[in-house]
View 1: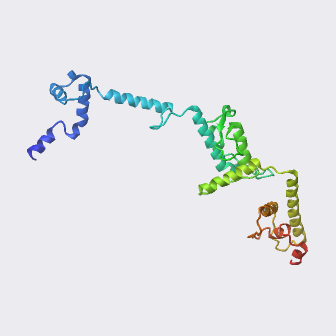
View 2: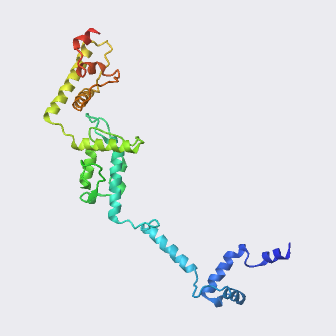
Length: 286
């Protein structure tokens, strides 16, 4: 070992002694007379800043303050403003609206006989988002992108509207649509339809008439041709008034031709009650 290496290995300023030297320096800053004379002379000749004080108590104080902020939940990210109670509540309401849009279909009223149990996901509960009944009469922003829903409503009204839109007799699910523009368009159209669509008495009678024709044809075919392949529509009767309205509305807007890629299920009903094929002609083909 060279003389230089021997000197480095024996010096108290070697890297392995750094914590010991730092502790001595802290002690020197607090009370110079508490360290050995050679160390006192060495630290005095370092040329530290005038009035420099020990760092240890400051570090401990800052750590204690940070610990207290975490315990009280008042800590914030660097550069961000502290979140007030009202801001936290608004964030919770916005999250609730998003949860209903994503999961409301899970509790939709799609069982007219009431035989199916529809448990409500716990994420749709007020307590899950730190909301309570005390907040029901407080107004919050709805984040609405259309005029059908007001920009501000009481939480009670927001929940009632969310249940009407997403948990009624029609359920819709949009989360699987990866294209954001398409997903928001579908969601907005669904919201507007659920909030603003109200059928007039005449429209209700037309729907009932179409449903009655669809059901009547199915019953006749089941009775008259029980062993024949008849592509039953049973369970999907609403297809008939839906197609009828779609075709009529398209004609009003100038559409001239419609091509139906028809499935097997319900094709006979569509042929007669939508496309106008003669029942006698259809029955003769059996």
